[in-house]
Image (cartoon, rainbow, N blue to C red; front, side, top):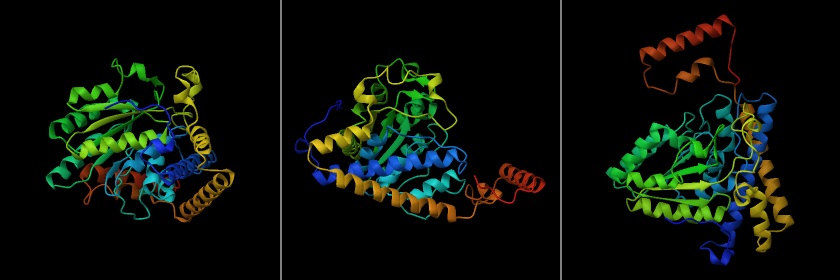
Length: 348
C-alpha cells in the first residue's frame, strides 16, 4: 500500500463536507474527554490515566473507516477510537475507577481495552479466523502502539493472520515513544509498516494527524482485509503528553525537535484551520461543538460518580464462570486483607 501524507481540498477526497465536520466533532469530543480525565486523575478521582492528546485525528479517522458491524480490539490509549465508535464516556471513566469497562451494557462490537501490551493482537487475529469459519463478511481492526511491535504477541498474531488470510487490519499508532524508548530502538527496519512483508501481506504509512487521510487509508485497508488480505497500517502521529500520569517525558525526550512539523503539530489546531480554510466551519459552529462535548462529558462524570464503588471481590467475578483454585485462593486473600484493614469498598 502507498503512503498518504498531505492535505487536499475536500472536493478532491471521496468524503462529503458533512463527513469532514463529523470527524471534527468527534475529535473535539475526544480532546475534551482527555483533558477532563487528566484533571480528574490529578485530584485523585482515579488512580492513573494514559493521555492521548495529539492522537485524536489518527484514532477518529480510523474509527470512522469501520463498518457498523466491524470489531474493534482496543488498548488502554484508544479512548478516542472508542468514543468515535459510540462507547459511552461514562463506561470509559468507570473502567478507570475499577469497574467493568462496559458498565452501561452496550452491545457495540468493541472488545474491552487490553492493558497488557499486545495481548489483544492474537485475540483480534482469532476473531478474524472465526469470521472466516462463519463466512462472516465483517472485518477486525486491532489498535496498538509502536511499543507493542516488540512483543511476541505481535509476531504470532500477524503470522497467523498472514497464513490464514484473516480479515484483519492491524492499526499501529506510531507516536515515536514506547514509554521512554524511541522508535529507532524498537526495530532496525526502515518502518514498522515494512515488517508486514515478513508475514506475507502489505503494510503502509499514513499521516496520522490528518483524519481524512487516515479515514481513506484505513477504509482501503479494510476493503483488502475483507478480500482475505490483512494489512498493517502505521499511523504516524505524536504523543504530546506523558505516557501515563506517572511518567515525566521531559526526562527522555527533547520536545518536537526529533520529528517533522507535520507530525508534531497539534492535529486539532491543524484540522480546524483546514476546515475554516475550506469554508466548512465558523466560530459559531466551533463554539456549539465544544458546548455539546462539555455537556456530554459532564453527564458522563455524573453517571460515573453515581455508581457505587466496587466491592473488593468484584475484580474476580467476571473472569471465569467457575473460579479455578489459584484465583479462589487470591480472592480469599483479598477479602482477608480487606477485612483486616477495614476496607469496605474500593473507590479506585
